[in-house]
Amino acid sequence: MRLSCLILTAALCTAAQADEPRKDPYLDAPVTAAELKALQGRADPVAQKAVADTVAAEPAPAPTPVQAAVIGLNPEKHDIMTTAFNEAKVPDCLHADGLKRQPTFFLNGVLALPFIPIAYLRGVCQ
Picture 1 (tube, rainbow, N blue to C red):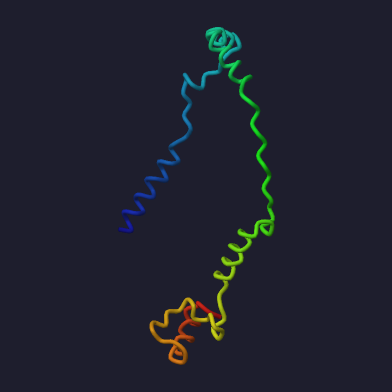
Picture 2: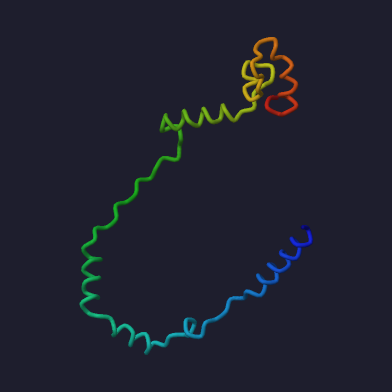
């Protein structure tokens, strides 16, 4: 298994190194000013006028409102962030919420005391 992974990795590395950007003689050919002028003359004047009229008729885009960067301006977001920080905080093992991430099954109160060192060793409380 290891050997096949090494062979596959080596093959992919050599393939990636061999993939140098290739130049297409048709697409990468430089365009001269005369050719550019000839191409511009090929456009249909009716289509050019329609595009120009459409661009002129479009209203300018409305400026987007700048939203406040301070979370405290929106009480709903503030409550969400406060709740998220309180949930993320690792509780103290000897407080009421010390076993909130440690399953104690059906045991509560004094019967849940053996789970405190287990929770501490698992790192779900401090």
